[in-house]
Amino acid sequence: MASIQKRPSGVYRARYRDPDGKEHSRHFKRKIDAQKWLKEVSASIVTGQYVDPKAGEISFEDYFKKWETRQIWAPATRRNARNAVARCTFKDAKLKSIRKADVEEFVKHLHDEGLAASSIKTIMRIVQMILKSATEDRMIAVDPAVGVKLPRVSRAKEMVLPSVEEVGALINAADRPLKLLIALCAFAGLRRGEAIAVQLGDFDFETQTLNVQRQVRSAEGGGSEYEAPKHDSGRVVYLPKPLLDLVTDHVENWGLRGPDKWLFALTPAGPGRGYLEPQWRELKKEAGHDDLRQHDLRHFYASGLIASGCDVVTVQRALGHSAASITLDIYSHLWKSAEDLTRGAAAGLMGEANIKVG
Image: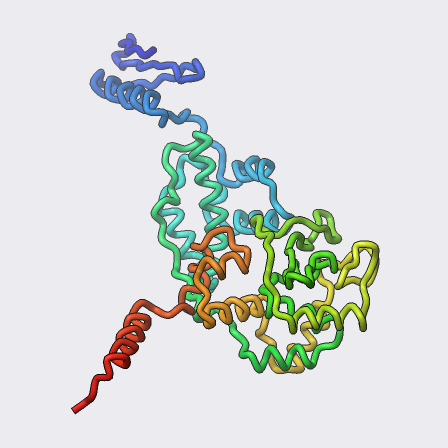
């Protein structure tokens, strides 16, 4: 219900009740302005776009603090989100006052600080999630992050791909149990946390497969705990026999730990998040590969699949990505381009046609 009343002072008081029955009012010098305002409010209520004018008074940071309590996050994800908000240039601003320009200026600020495009994208993913949620919660009418362009991530420049010879040299130089850990990352595509959490029962030596069903992560308050792989990326990986031979060698010559038969652990309780990290750093330093991360071994595995002709869906499933678009976002530069495929196909046709020059 809406109404306009002329006050003794000569101004017009426009009033309406929102969907919750709460009354709101504004004063205007001209009746036509009051009518226009009520028309806009009424339209927003009818279309479901109505936002309480006082809802956006809360600051970006204070809204985040309430919003994060509703999120089911791993400790590392929660830390990353809090760090992203802490460095946000408009964290103290009221939600309703944040504009697209503010978000763009924050992106520019991160770029000027020298952050890599991938790091900016990670921070902005959190900021975008918060602003999208604020819009869905009817705290603000329009999401100011929509349409904000981020620096393009050049995967080709940021990705470190060791050669086959370098990976082989690292594995041959490693002692047990690090030898098998490196091999599982390089030839099964496991993330480090997934590889460390492997148990003997996860292997099926008859079908030559590995069921990736857990990962180790940092627990809230310290220590380590186990959970399903990130983003529901549990999967079955098909293993080459030489890798299974390394597993057998590991079991026979290094052994297992505890009733769960952990492959990588010093105690029956299982391995911690940082297990074998010092040994890995020392090994790669001696090999002259200080910039190599264990996650780069996963990239090495993916690049090998692509070079062997595996399509994007096959690679996606092997890596446990939730969508093929993620696989393409990371590895698209490794697949042959349409030009390469067209040129190769045409060359093959010409070869079959036995064309003679001259």
